[in-house]
Amino acid sequence: MSLSQPHAHRHNAALLQAYAAEQNPARRLALRNALVSANLPLVRRVAWLESQRSANSFDDLEQAGRLGLIKAVERFDPRRGTALSSAAMPYITGAIRQYLRDQCQPIHGSRGLRELHQRGQELQQQRQHQGQAPLSPEALCQQLGCSLERWQEALALQSALHMGSLDQPCQGTEASGDSLVDLIAAPSGDAYTAVIASDLRRLLWSVLRQLQAPQRRLLLGRVIQQRSWRDLGNQLGWSAKVTQRRCEELMAQLQQQLEPALLST
Image (cartoon, rainbow, N blue to C red; front, top):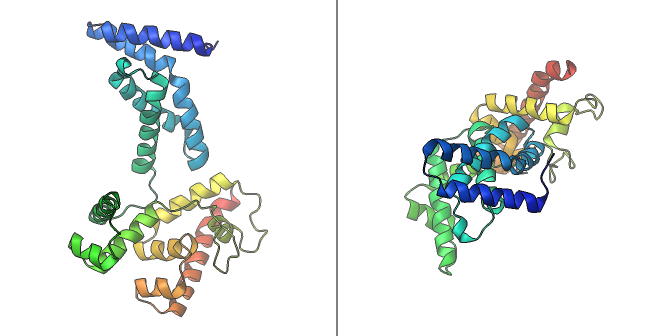
């Protein structure tokens, strides 16, 4: 039977007081574990929300969240006057999202490009805090000691790493608001309507991981970032017409790769 909220606060307070005062390592560990066990509903709540957003395993996310809760208990300072539940939430959320970044990243890019983007962001944020206008791309590249093309690659990678949902409408394209799921799974509007969306998303992620970098840039740039054929062609070194043709070929290839799995669901 679950504890009432006032009872839970009193229970936490008693355990925290005993944990802070305990010097014996074995008994201290037991008290820490008791605190973690008493606050597991916090972990389950965050893990459930993240599993709904990301279609990742609830059990895996809960395990990651438990590590965050353990860290929160070990670092908690009751003298600050904050409830453990409030102090633990950033640790739990951070641990789960770090797990998602490290273990569930659909696209892996150059570490150098990621670090370059981070340095550029920090420089622009520093200027913002000082009340200065942001640097132009050319001036920023000069400060970072890189070429404009290199900085654009870093921006493209960051955008791909943090791209929107596969169910995100692709407005501004011929897709007329269809998502990537719609475009690949049901181009005729009725081919795979029985497929469960979460299963389809997982299949798409597995296929996206196998694409070469130019193919990922093309697909995600067109469908997720809603860039024009000319803009994408300039980046990839193709004409607008060739870019459009290769994107359509890629979409057809993805449909063909997914069809056996979809038909077996």
